[in-house]
Image (cartoon, rainbow, N blue to C red; front, top):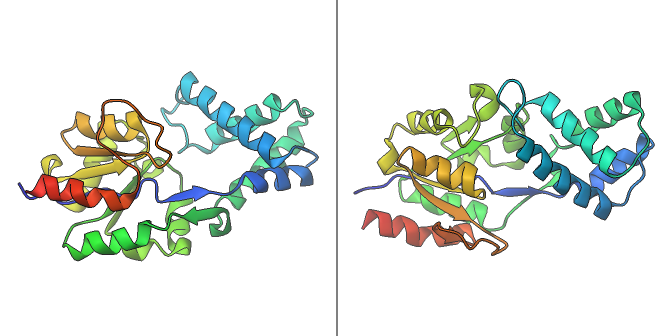
Length: 231
């Protein structure tokens, strides 16, 4: 069956903001190295995800959830409890991560976007993120490469819930059997897409995954998946 691509660029950029985390922190009296900040953010992220969603059912789409994440980082680093300073730190950090300078586009992204669209396939993004995403994609020059963008904060629904995938399918005007979703999170991306009948591929750039999933280590490798699905 002909398979059109509904979502591909879930892991097209990565942040380079751990230096920014430390730099902004120092301006508000929170002194830590970039490496310590990175470890603390990773640990707090895992703990926050394990503890579940906020009262509105959202995580990264919710500004208050993100603020609590940052406060947990400061606690993990043993930095002084200064409520006013913490609030100011979060506000500046939130604005910094809306800027393109702290993000890096993977080198395989734009060539693959061009190549996939040249095949006449619909290319879209499904993202668990907040209102900063659309202007950030514009600033990074990615919006012009995309046919649709589906953002969790606008739907009040995050992956792996079915409604966000259905919204992306509606934007692409296709059904689940025609769609291939590529993402970097096994549960949110792969299992969420599979649950409603979409094809799904795990983008594992670091080569760490050993579970039950179709895995690629670069976006360039999705061509063989597309060709197999369309054959």
